[in-house]
Length: 266
Image 1 (cartoon, rainbow, N blue to C red):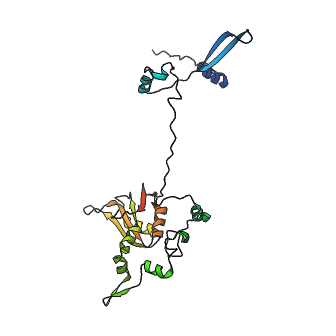
Image 2 (cartoon, helix red, strand yellow; image 1 turned 120 degrees about the vertical axis):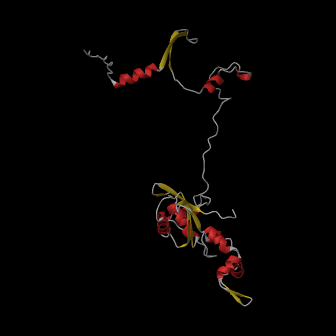
Image 3 (cartoon, helix red, strand yellow; image 1 turned 45 degrees about the horizontal axis):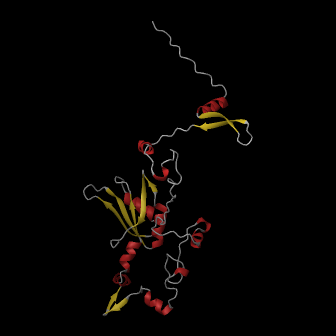
């Protein structure tokens, strides 16, 4: 034979304003004191309302507060001492370099680059190269005759009766290798079991510029992707566009990272 269980009814809340007041009053303590006013000699009633705050602190801090004080603080109470303990200076982190590895400058050049919310690439009219404006050109004080000697020749030349292609001249001066390092981007965090990944990456990164070289690392035994690739562009402007467009780009269930490849000399 089963018996019914009767639960006690909860106490009526009534007005929500009264409930808030009762909860607030539970955290407050009222102290009433009668004293004589020294100026008038009359009895006055002083009422103090103290707010009780419960604070949870680690055990180490609680034990440290029980230490016996000495020196000038020997007669001080348990309250915080502003002359002894103070807040440290707030230091904010500032990222001074962009994803392209270049240092940020808060100058008028940033306003020029953001015209109509489009990305403008600095190009010098003096040395005909990108990466800086004409006013910042390192060769702006060099005359045209001397500038022709400083600027590497891109024409073929004859040495000992033999024709030397322009690319060989650049390689002898160390410019060909440096160009490959400067215009190569490294793509990481790629999926390992994705089929035809090389074709997909070629289509993606060729949308921003001409690709000179493409290398996708694969395992020799399993033929699976190792998760990174190297892509070389014809110029630095296209490489920067690839980093701006595809860095932190969602690919399948991953977020790929695109940055300039570090040379072996670094």
